[in-house]
Image (cartoon, rainbow, N blue to C red; front, side, top):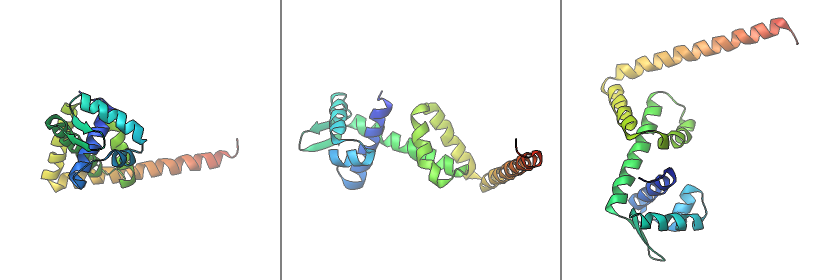
Length: 158
């Protein structure tokens, strides 16, 4: 089983190959914000573990095993983005939130999240009901902050 770091590389390589038809060390380094030498070391490890085939100066390609895992990792990432959007997480937080949680969930949890997405998408009323709860809770938070501010003002400086 690949480590979280290996997963990040496999996922990015899979994306690059599907978008551009190839993945170069420099492209991977740029996408992951790491040094090319780090990419080379990881690519060599992934080659040794049979996730990809790497030939120096010739490029790399995913093996059947690497391709299968890459596809599953992209699915996991997309699914987590989807559920966070559905539950109303702010768009500017979604990518970092997914990056923070994706390696900490079992595939069983991912499958159940898939079920939850399906549950919401099968009936738009469920999404609307969730939005109503979200709005109600947001209003309660605002009210609580206003009460706290009023209490602090009435008490004066400490």
